[in-house]
Length: 73
Image 1 (tube, one colour):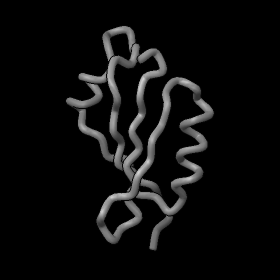
Image 2: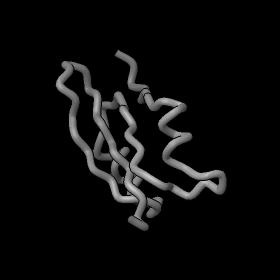
Image 3: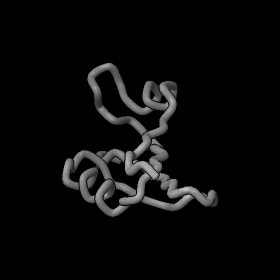
């Protein structure tokens, strides 16, 4: 089995979550297939741009849902 992480997010959701200057306006949900969700969450947290909530998906794959919320809300 390969050990690559796979990120899934819709282009429309990205466009709706950020303004033209790159300011995060509303939460953005990322689906990430990974064997290392703790590493992903730690690295996202280190950026300091948003708060993060994490949950697993009901599938049998190692799929995690990361919701990034702007700190200014």
